[in-house]
Length: 288
Image 1 (cartoon, rainbow, N blue to C red):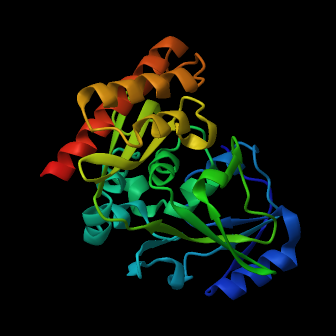
Image 2 (image 1 turned 45 degrees about the vertical axis):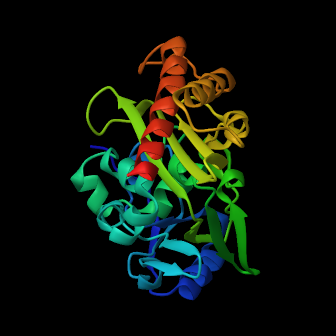
């Protein structure tokens, strides 16, 4: 039987209380909510935190709301709640696309948005989706609150800018006119990690692309995005040729590796094809 090493357990009911507990227990404390990644790692002794800070009762982090021109998604929002959110789907259908293909209902009912992003798994779906949308991450710590671009949030596999004693509290996504989005994924079986996946967001004005966001996952794209492909789309007339060219550039600039999920060349092909499909779907939604 796999059993985690001994650890202390604390429960917080407010952000301030969670931060105080993190400060009390030091750098070896970890925050837990859904626990779908952390607990298995603890059972395998890949992670051995000295204390777990349970934030499941910090209800202020479980809201989805519109504030000004931002969609705000609390870090404690469950995957199923984001999937069911009409306001999230209305403004950013890419979030519903991504949530539909994350794991299974059991995981989506318990796993959280913040937990997924902080786990920083190189194959994580929401990192590419929120990256395409140019979301902002709100982090609170002993020195107050700071906001960083999600494109600067991940510093490497399983690493983020969230420091010891800090807590990711919210994702903020700018709502801009003339935009839509989509997410496409290929996995070995339903609910599995992707072989490759791509998210795309398009904003049009006057029949041209004024801005584009492209997120990639599982293909070692820097910061989960394809910046060169985004740049190629800006100012372009939306067309099948423009989307295919963006897909070609995205595939060229990612760096997949061969593993048990598939060979690198196949993943690179998927990165390009899925980018093209996601752009096409986002454009179709804009025309609807």
